[in-house]
Length: 251
Length: 251
Image 1 (tube, chains in turn brown, red):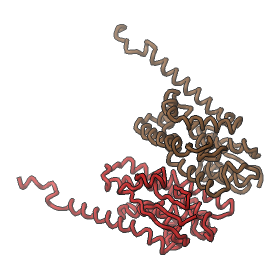
Image 2 (cartoon, chains in turn cyan, red):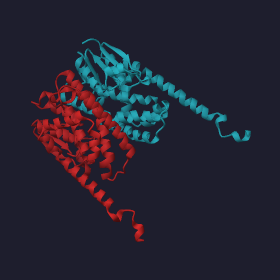
Image 3 (cartoon, rainbow over the protein chains, first blue to last red):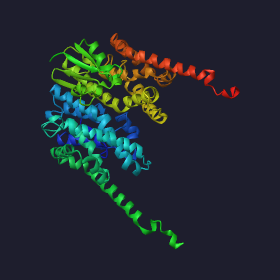
Image 4 (cartoon, rainbow over the protein chains, first blue to last red):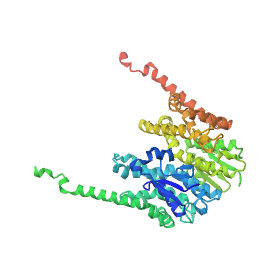
């Protein structure tokens, strides 16, 4: 087949899920960086790899594939020795994992991506703040967290659907939630803290896939610091006397 | 396992896809109507069937499942004698079908559902018209149709990914597009007519799954007629002299 090539931007949460899966499972692969901030995903070269122009994408011999869930399912089936818990061969457990992965698209992903975009990433890239869109995204995000907490983390084990070991759905959705790291810490805590099982599940998935989980998320922690510094600089500037409405006495 | 129960509202396009699949493949099942317009999906009884409170959902013995793609994959695997083309066992073809199904969620479904909601169904159910949302949904819909026409219907056969027979992805996405039937005919034609392969693919999928395709879509054709009559009545009312701004001469 030739060595697997994974086209990824570690700032993208589905890219991180695929990279962690490959690293954890000892898959021999080459990571090829596609820098979205430099619009490399729109290049003619990458279009040959993925006509949809999105990361992650893989090339395995003459076979190419995109969409992170489809990639994770393919990798779990194509590479020998991947433990069954990642994508169980039992038809009923597999069907439930497919259900959770399908649900992810229009619920958790939709809510989390748009909330982060409309509160932090959008303004950072020059897109105007949109409080109405942020509030709508927050509703979808909170509703998704409620379903995770009370439906899918309601089983015996500490992973989704009562699993005692993580599946590709755990990895995919925890990576989705990790992007909330770039929010203001108070805001992140306001959103996540009511969901105790979700918080524990993030930690359990991190522990189960370390050291690869932390290694692949390092870029996100650096971005978190950068946004924190920007926020504290902005707050300082607001507090400087010259920026206060005290100009009258000098006139 | 006990007889399969399919909880569906034929006005929902993923419900129709599951029903057509079952009928075409001779699966012995009981259809249980969940009338969304009467909010039956929010009843305590249905919550037991599907805690996500959405149709379609199935119960098969003690096993329950929702999300139409997950259901179609399950049925293709759980019932003996389903032809391989519906969900190929070949790992590479299966991966590509998974990719198209994943793509469906945030692209074709997102565009088509919101466009129909913001132009026809919303106003019909008292939701105010939202031209900005309709225009955004139209962009997603047209971009999705372009990808279908130039990427996934670009193969040798007349179905997605060059297939000579339909897969669950063909059925799922053609059912999605069928909801455009309720649009004003001029608007539907404006949107679909540039996409010749898409139009042919809708016909080919209809032909390949008839008479079940037409049988299950009958409810949609009736809704189409109802909306057409409403539109022509509204147009007549507008043209009546008493509704024109000609009141001045009578005063």
